[in-house]
Image: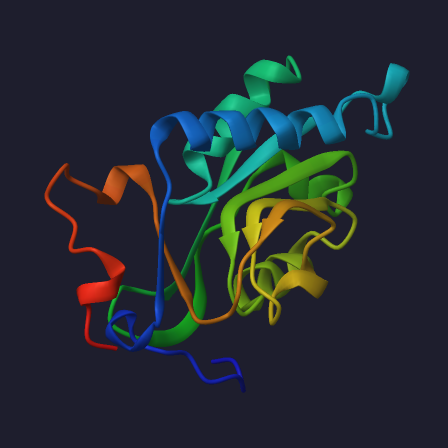
Length: 174
């Protein structure tokens, strides 16, 4: 477990909902930043590794935009919506391990405290780590990201949302 304190979802002060359109646009922006920057021929990447589950959608978009056909998953359990738990590997990626991750992109939706990427780096130190969103405590574990949000922000990803009434901010008791 990280030495950093993890807040429960209920203790976050700011909500940041992300729509499917924003998710797609930000994943494409991340692909654009990494286009031609890989160590392979013409700046290509060997493959994409999605950190499950949050990294799966961005990794799919990245693979399409960068024309990458090798896709792996790295299953790491670190927290749920209630609290931080011990970070542990549930499933390792296969082919990427042979080269310590060299030439591979490791993708996640968010780097929060950095514990997931830190654990992944122990196994794949030569991979390139990228996320759509980064918080200050985790940003140093990320090689490339699109947007930084404050540590006290809870990002609501589109797969976690339903359309419903939202109370105006001025009426909320914080």
